[in-house]
Image 1 (cartoon, rainbow, N blue to C red):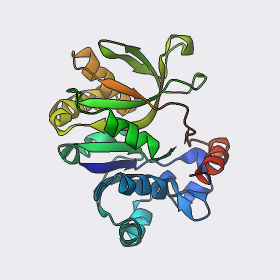
Image 2 (image 1 turned 135 degrees about the horizontal axis):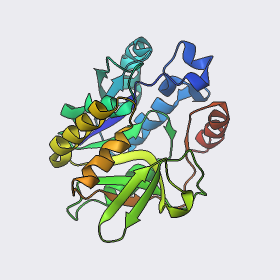
Image 3 (image 1 turned 180 degrees about the vertical axis):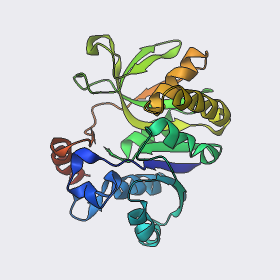
Image 4 (image 1 turned 90 degrees about the vertical axis):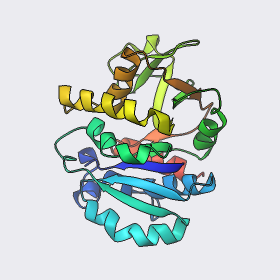
Length: 245
């Protein structure tokens, strides 16, 4: 098993920080970035290798690669996304299709979260699940969140931002455990998704899988402080949370 981080996005709503840095390298606690926090989580649960999909301002990640490897005791492999500034992250995850064959814990490069999330996903393995989404069933939902409807027996039925919050079971927080045996089917679903519309999310790839009859499972994370950093208000929340870990 390895870690996988999607860190190719431009994060234009976080300018001026992202004039020179990808969103994953915006500081959230002193010099500590979202990428630092995620790599620390991966190391804490015993992972030794991490693949990072890079694109926008990728040179900043390349420059820090050796220092990050030394700091967290991880071997990092950087995967270039050649369309990071044009296409959405369904293509970005597809770029990591070979890495997924190793079984991965996937984390979005803009999600500040504690290591308890990774531990929850690992504890949920073992009953034949192939893909397990970390789900917040506590948070009050609004329009922007990636909302999920779950059937207790059949797993995920619907995953989209375009849903009445009242219908949703919870919010997908941007962290997934993907077993290697799901890699080929997921890669095909992602390809179908971005070929249909390059602006779609990888979560739309999950929906494509569900539509094909593939079971996608969830693991509720409990009452956990986390945030997806899209704008400066989110960044302030991330800084409040990060210093508590």
